Length: 194
Image (cartoon, helix red, strand yellow):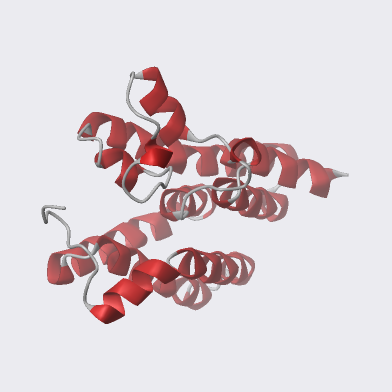
């Protein structure tokens, strides 16, 4: 029963669509009808409201962290990792939005923050370095996420490395359109006018 409870706590927290909720509360448009149609911070930024995009990023991160920390307190670290998986899947496939959610980068970082916070700092450093070199947000997320299972494995955190191998695979699947655009040379760069 504790396994089911842990997963459900994570999934329900992960399903909270902060981008949609915050833009609606601010009187903004339904973000599913603009830009990429995505519910994440990058699409919220397309409304022109940087503060709202930052709040969405924080909310999407912290729901992953909260899921991990709550279940860690209740049942321990192993089930906290299961809650992290639930939160990530909840963000990708939220029950409230007919299972059409975001791409998962912020929630990925939030789960990482809850389970191994120094690795979240490593993710951020890799993301920033890649973004500075290539100016592609999607490429930065892909490279940083690909590095995480390797770094976690090298650090000896095998169960969390296995979790992040799965999360990284899912994150790459959710970015398949971005990958196609990167390969075609049509992906938008950071700071470029759309």
